[in-house]
Length: 128
Image 1 (cartoon, rainbow, N blue to C red):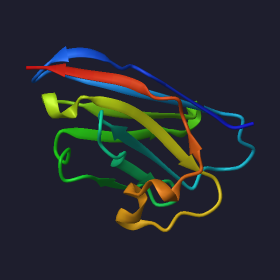
Image 2 (image 1 turned 45 degrees about the vertical axis):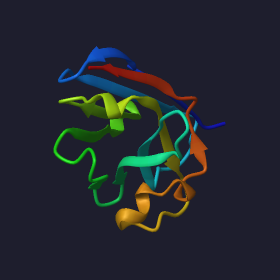
Image 3 (image 1 turned 90 degrees about the vertical axis):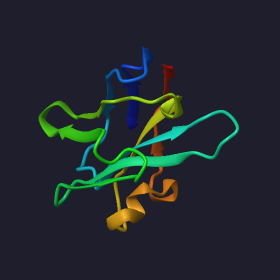
Image 4 (image 1 turned 135 degrees about the horizontal axis):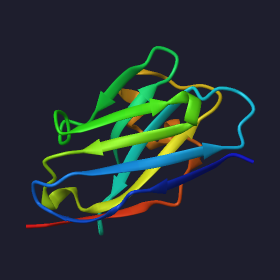
């Protein structure tokens, strides 16, 4: 059974940094794409960053481009999201997601319908 477990969330002041981790376990074959999503109270879940594993291409939402970096350490089966220059509007529950079979590629990877495997989420709170 595939499991995704996020960690690294917390509370920091605006301008600070956090690094989220997502440990992926229980899959017999390679991942096709992985991503980070977030959901703020009263808002829809939105894609933040994603990787198309085969080519290593990365994709970012405009709101985080230049501040967030997604990376994957295949040997450790771990996905990371380095978040710098954090803003109060980054406050949300952050989720990692993965897909084992097929991914459309491109900026479609920032759409949640690309993924069938999800973690439980980790809370990020940024104070002004």
